Image (cartoon, rainbow, N blue to C red; front, side, top):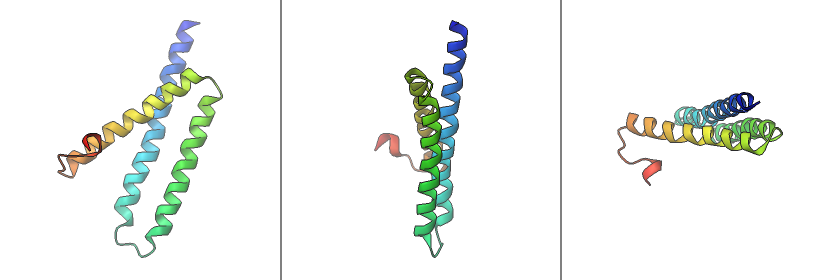
Length: 101
């Protein structure tokens, strides 16, 4: 029974990493594309609504299982945030990024 719990926790972590990619990757893509758009508020609003809805549904599905899986999902989500912030901060040549603000 212990092996099943470890596998479920690992899958929850990977699910959180996927949700993090959807949320923070979507934010990055939105900000890259919104520059120069005439109706940037609509793009930003649509992006926020879609990304938040997707992530909330994803977390809600995990939270229905148990709280430990939820925290594993949250850990994967936050890890992706840290990794993307570091990678994209270096890509833009910015030595200071959100993790050191």
